[in-house]
Picture (cartoon, rainbow, N blue to C red):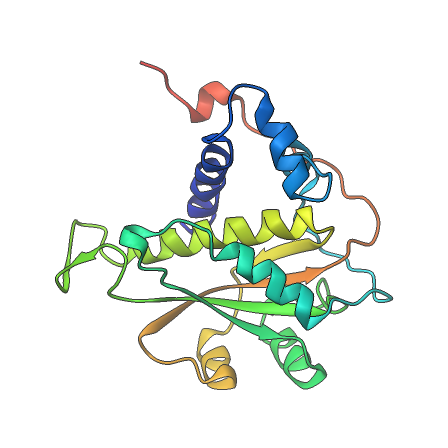
Length: 212
């Protein structure tokens, strides 16, 4: 379910990034906003990274810059339900590493780990009631949109990421004092890739898109 939301979020981000440009000018303008990196290059070079360079670090200022860009993500009625808890100090990093299941060894050298949540009862609701049958799934959808902005902006800044669904939510909630009205969705590692991963195979377009 969460993976599907991220795919939808990527499509939405691609559309929103180009909606204010004409024709092929999209890549040129986006490149100027991402220090010379085109949006197409960001899309093509982003990977889910499972091995990080331990010699490289990321500063709090850089994470703040990243998350400031994430705030541009769209959400239901601009509810902005997504929240982020950033583990950047040694103690919190080690604690989160022990709460991501089989991904522990894969992200052990990532200098930043980000716990993602969304506030329940906001996106998908009108006057306190669900606006349709999806209810709080809209909150998860909006969190997916925000996380899509996060991983693509991270790549534009030269960073790499891994979205992890395996996580011990109750222990993460206790570790960061996450309130009960927020739902923990994922943990995202942030760092620099060690080596160059292979490009994954994608399903044929006609299997995922229908034209009428």
